Image (cartoon, rainbow, N blue to C red):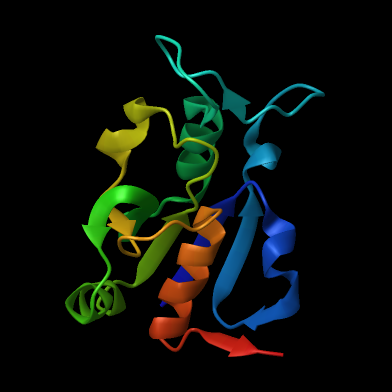
Length: 142
């Protein structure tokens, strides 16, 4: 199994040796010198959301026919042993780390599954991605 992680904080994973895992900075999929990945939510509201353009560009570049795309999202399905077993069956897993107030909702048709770690708050989707990897024995801590 290959796991590819799309994140706005690739340095988060620097302290870990991850086997069969590739880390991608969403900013590298943005054109222009400012490399902005966030914007205000459509219709207004507090906070920022991840723009659709870097997400689509990243998926266009990285997705394979066998890829299964997972978004870490507090509104997603609660992560469980059954969900872990489902993910372990996949040959190619792309984890999108939710961040800010969320992501542009137009990305949802491109996502196979939204996953929540449970009824508690974490500061970023990278923590959820790390928990998923750890549960699947895909991680080796330094």
